[in-house]
Image (cartoon, rainbow, N blue to C red):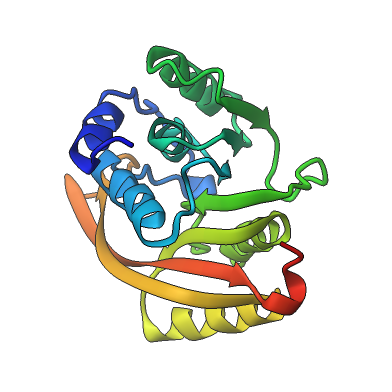
Length: 213
């Protein structure tokens, strides 16, 4: 298995999107954060190597490619934007992961995404521009996967809201990690070159009664 430093270096080489859609709340996951999440998911929980992994809202493919590089058996990247998938495909080809990764154009709520997969990784919309957008991603993730890793805005109010939503969807929060997420100046309303926002990474498992695996 790749060392964390080597995984991060490989992810640093991918090409990022040149334009982002504010209505989709696209905020690219930095390679070092993606690498750290993937590495911890494997080292602590064996959730990546030889697993079937899905990256919901994959964008340029940083999570999908990282999972493949780390040793996932099969990876599915899903995004609603064809330009994002084209970039993800270029990055996948560049790093020699095209045999492991399948890319799917479609909305995450689409019925064509039925699973099952072992692990979902997702940096979904925060639900600021479109209320509940983050829950749409969670709902799909938890319907197709045994384990979900998902990034959300931190804060007591949001934690309470998400805990209720996850419980309703038949999931159990097994871990929350809080960290600073850098958002570059990618939209016109951004004033700072880099804005740090506090986020929570949730690890969510299906409850035993809902988990057939």
